Length: 137
Image (cartoon, rainbow, N blue to C red; front, side):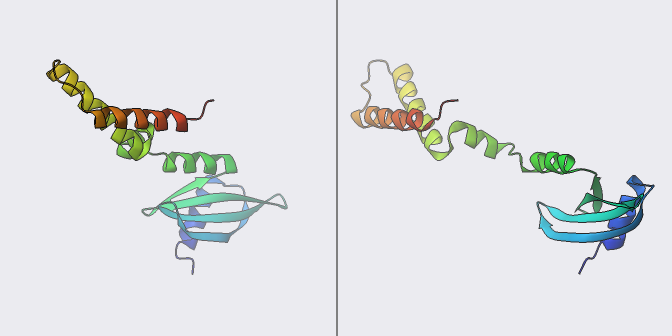
């Protein structure tokens, strides 16, 4: 059951004025954080279509596939903590960072202290894994 059908068609009419026979031909009820509708309409005896994305009661008419792709890219882009974690290499990167910072703290805080063998071994293994898993270009 398409709950927003009339609202979606009205939003399409507000953007595409010179068309006739507006109709919803597809409804995806769980698209990103909202709903996606495909609206078909006729202009000069030819059928055209557009996408209407409804989120939090707001309808956004996307007149081309390129605009839909751009909206999807914006919505799925990671931000904040998730982006930072990914840029560090996920959990392996975080563990590597913690081990590295621990060694730096020992060296700077107590230059006369010896770095425990287990930390040196762990750092070597983590760095080998980290750089070995990176793909070039």
